[in-house]
Image 1 (cartoon, rainbow, N blue to C red):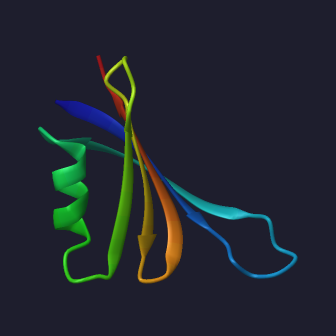
Image 2 (tube, rainbow, N blue to C red):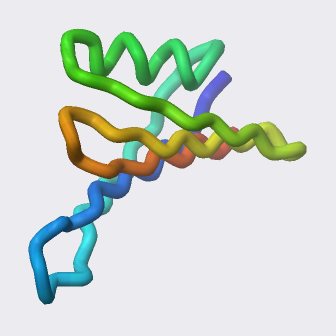
Length: 75
Protein backbone atom coordinates (compact mmCIF):
# COMPACT_ATOMS: atom_id res chain seq x y z
CA UNK A 1 0.00 0.00 0.00
CA UNK A 2 1.15 3.54 -0.71
CA UNK A 3 1.10 6.17 2.06
CA UNK A 4 1.78 9.84 2.51
CA UNK A 5 3.97 10.11 5.61
CA UNK A 6 3.99 13.25 7.74
CA UNK A 7 6.86 13.14 10.27
CA UNK A 8 6.84 15.75 13.05
CA UNK A 9 9.71 16.23 15.49
CA UNK A 10 8.76 18.22 18.56
CA UNK A 11 11.22 20.94 19.53
CA UNK A 12 12.06 20.58 23.24
CA UNK A 13 13.89 23.91 23.49
CA UNK A 14 12.32 26.38 25.90
CA UNK A 15 10.42 29.28 24.33
CA UNK A 16 10.34 27.57 20.93
CA UNK A 17 6.98 26.08 19.90
CA UNK A 18 8.04 25.21 16.34
CA UNK A 19 8.23 21.67 15.03
CA UNK A 20 10.26 20.16 12.23
CA UNK A 21 7.82 18.65 9.72
CA UNK A 22 8.80 16.36 6.84
CA UNK A 23 6.63 14.86 4.08
CA UNK A 24 7.31 11.84 1.90
CA UNK A 25 5.51 9.09 0.01
CA UNK A 26 6.32 5.53 0.97
CA UNK A 27 5.15 2.05 0.03
CA UNK A 28 4.83 -0.65 2.68
CA UNK A 29 2.49 -3.35 3.98
CA UNK A 30 2.67 -2.39 7.66
CA UNK A 31 3.60 1.15 8.80
CA UNK A 32 4.66 0.03 12.30
CA UNK A 33 7.07 -2.60 10.95
CA UNK A 34 8.37 -0.15 8.35
CA UNK A 35 9.06 2.45 11.06
CA UNK A 36 10.77 -0.07 13.36
CA UNK A 37 13.07 -1.04 10.48
CA UNK A 38 13.78 2.61 9.62
CA UNK A 39 14.68 3.39 13.24
CA UNK A 40 16.59 0.17 13.93
CA UNK A 41 19.43 0.61 16.42
CA UNK A 42 17.78 3.52 18.24
CA UNK A 43 16.15 3.53 21.67
CA UNK A 44 12.46 3.37 20.78
CA UNK A 45 9.03 3.52 22.46
CA UNK A 46 5.94 3.42 20.22
CA UNK A 47 2.23 4.04 20.66
CA UNK A 48 0.12 3.10 17.62
CA UNK A 49 -3.37 4.40 16.72
CA UNK A 50 -5.18 2.91 13.73
CA UNK A 51 -8.01 4.87 12.13
CA UNK A 52 -11.02 3.40 10.39
CA UNK A 53 -9.95 5.00 7.11
CA UNK A 54 -6.65 3.08 7.04
CA UNK A 55 -4.60 5.93 8.51
CA UNK A 56 -2.01 5.02 11.12
CA UNK A 57 -0.63 7.50 13.67
CA UNK A 58 2.47 6.48 15.60
CA UNK A 59 3.68 8.52 18.56
CA UNK A 60 7.30 7.68 19.27
CA UNK A 61 10.07 8.53 21.67
CA UNK A 62 13.25 8.08 19.61
CA UNK A 63 16.47 8.38 21.59
CA UNK A 64 14.62 10.68 24.02
CA UNK A 65 13.02 12.91 21.34
CA UNK A 66 9.23 13.02 20.89
CA UNK A 67 8.21 12.35 17.30
CA UNK A 68 4.93 11.76 15.50
CA UNK A 69 4.46 9.78 12.30
CA UNK A 70 1.14 9.97 10.42
CA UNK A 71 0.65 7.46 7.59
CA UNK A 72 -2.33 8.34 5.33
CA UNK A 73 -3.24 5.93 2.53
CA UNK A 74 -2.98 7.32 -0.99
CA UNK A 75 -6.01 6.11 -2.94
